[in-house]
Amino acid sequence: MQMFGVEVAIAFLRLKEMVVSYFVWNASYDIGVDIIDSQHRRIADYVNDLHHAIEHNDVSEVYSVMDRLKDYTVDHFSFEEQLMARAGYPLLDDHLLIHEKFCEHMELLREQLHGGTDPMNVARKMRTGLMRWLLQHIKEEDQNYASLVRKALRKESSWVSATLKRVFGSVDHHA
Image (cartoon, rainbow, N blue to C red; front, side, top):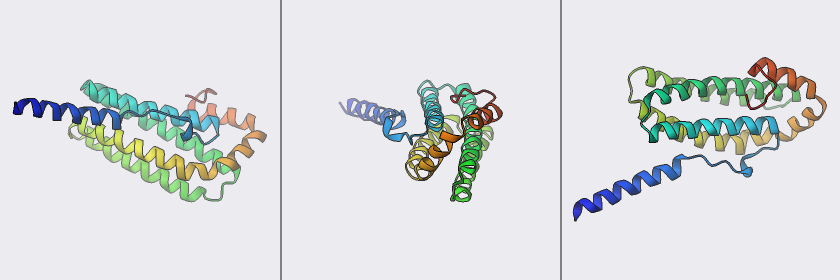
C-alpha cells in the first residue's frame, strides 16, 4: 500500500513539472511589434523543445537545442537592439546590460553542459529560467520600448527588411 502512495507522489511531481515547464504562448505576451513578437514566440518554442528533450531523456537534443537557442537569442538581441537604437529608445543602454547579463547566464549553463554537468539538470535550469526570464523581460523591459518602436517601424519598413536580412540571413522575421 505504501508503494502506491510513492508512485502517486512521483506521478504528481512529474505532472506538476510538465504543467510548469511547457510554455503556452498567449496574446497577453505580445508587445504589439509583430517582428519582435514572432521572435519571442520562437524563443518560447525553444523552451518547449527543451521540455520535449527532457521528457524523452534525449541528451543529444538537449545539446542541439541549447546551441540553436544561443545562436537565435544572440541574433534576436542584435536585431532588437538595432531596432531600439533606430527608434531612439532612451533606455537602450540599460536594455543592453540586461541582454548582456542574460547571455552571460546562458553561456554559464552551456559551459556546465559541455563541462560534464548532468545535461538534463542543465536543460531543466535553462527551460525554467528562460521561461521566467522571457515573461518578465517582455512584460517589463520590452513593453517599455514598444510604442516608440511601433512609431519608427511605420516609417522604416525598408530598414527593417535590410536589417532582418543582415542579422538573420533572410527577411523572414521568424528566422
